[in-house]
Image 1 (cartoon, each protein chain N blue to C red):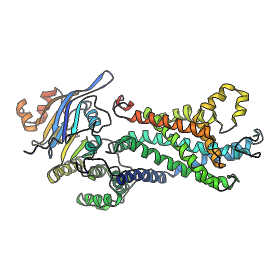
Image 2: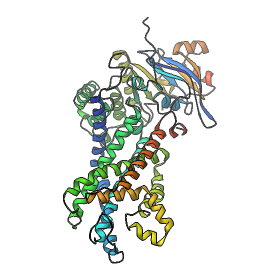
Image 3: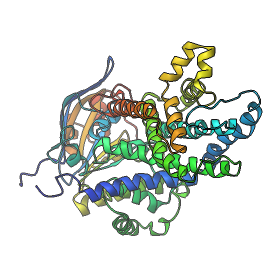
Image 4: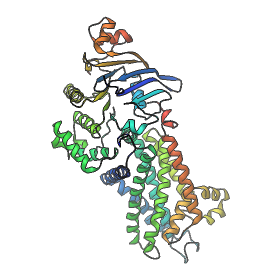
Length: 274
Length: 250
């Protein structure tokens, strides 16, 4: 068989992957309002919500912190995860939008294996979300929110990559189930808000446990909680093994789900009229 | 005759959306280097067939082969021989024409330098060389369509699928696009499957597949279908076959 009929070379896989990431970055640069709103959202929480609540919510010394920390410092990992969650859902929105516009079809008609195409799309979204988080951290730095040593900016990177993958895979799974563009409002109500509020982003879990054991268990089962804790520890140059395991497990489940949903032989696409 | 397999072979394809039968035992083939029109009214099952050939849906009944490569089992080899122009606009509007080309080429494992070389050549020959750096958003409807056709040729496929490519265009743009694609068939020995509900896009020398309510009612040279139906236009033959009136120009 000639190379034309056999598979692609490793170099061609790299070309395809970088092409997908390059397009996503270009699109992101062209959508400035998306970048600005991705940045404004956590800053509103930081400057308004956290400033108002620091008097009300005392945070005792809990790992990874070794001293009392300001409430702004406490909620920063949660806000970093929120940026990524929104981004993951936004790329899910963009896939729905793409599919309606036919761009998703252009992607899926490529001769590369479908798992690779979806993986490339996922990585492209993660790259964009990490850029957004660092942009937030630069602003937060001037608010005196920073890791104990500058090394924290580096150690948080793998945590962000993994959390980004998890949210991206979740978004992809949801996007295969969403047909109409308007349904993103539903995603906000039924996915983003519950995930954000029923987590350790805004308050430590021991406080939740005091008020409602049921909510405590819901928070523990929430993948968002584990993303937040993974990021929180990594920012302080530590590893939360429980969160790492949980995030890895959820990522696998969501990714496999997305792959099944987009598999032409089994997926939901087959059932939808068109 | 060489033993080259058909550009596209659709064999006993069936597809249902729940209880609704969209395609029923559909079989036909497209010869290499031929211009084949898939003619059917809206709702005939053309888009479903299109989704099956491009592997968006999996074919549950029957088999689809592109130059002898099974779309389901050997999809990489099948899809790399296939160029597609979807009915919906699929250019990235914010990106330039050339950036659209580079992205599409990457999806076929072709690097940016080669993509630009091929893209420039295609634009040049189509008389669109001056639009390479323009945003896709700034093109007219007809130009967008022509750019999409050029984009589908970047990886040098041997079969080109076009799903209602002239819908929503004015008469001049429609004629330009038809002429562009017919030229490609002649020049590149490209096989084309052209989906339409507009009867006046059919030439006497074309192969025609008449699809109606999910079934193939005729698949032959246009003149042969007219002869078999005892009519002197393909429009009249279509009416006699389907009992419905096909549309002339939009």
